Image (cartoon, rainbow, N blue to C red; front, side, top):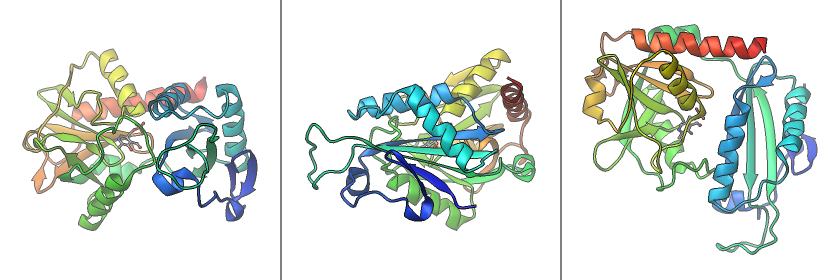
Length: 285
Ligand code: PLP
């Protein structure tokens, strides 16, 4: 089956799906994106993703190219045409196409691309064994709360992890504190308490992060939203990472240091069990 993409008003086979060379997303990374999990053919936690999309666009002064209702129709259609049951939907909105000039002129109309593809949930083995992460300096710009397509720092960080045989790189700020993973949020558990960096310009407000905070509240697990250092993470009882595609994955090694017993811990397991419960409820709804 040939894959179909939505590109600026048309549904086209991937082979023909392209944007103009003067699209500002291509020239300047002047755009915003979202990744939504498709589970059972439907988009999981969509309202939160759309809230974040609108916020990100607002922060860089790009208009939503269409209403939420119209966008929902496009997303439905892309998922349907690609026959995706379990996977992801990718959506990107750039400022549009214009003669190259750093500043933009009013009247450039945003361009939107939507794709969807099958992608399996994390394997049982990954969840049972946990994954290693490495750490590296956070080399990104200073507005990581905006889900911008300017991902070079993240790309280089992820590649570093890949070369090291690790799942992810936890990025570290100039004071030695972990910000987040290159495409995931970072968490540790100390004495039964969950610790994660607070929202702010240093991290992306993950949708899975928000869901995990809801679950923790429900389970009455204390959450301390504060920065933690690499050393503290290495000495933690448990560690894990979260994202739309990773869900919740236990982290069992940080650089050379084994975390806790070296096996996924009980707090992470409870969160994961309850995240799966949310998914089950969504599938039944
Ligand atoms: N942090 C970064 C830098 C990301 O790119 C992502 C996801 O792409 C996340 C965190 C996790 O966010 P979410 O849970 O919304 O997927």
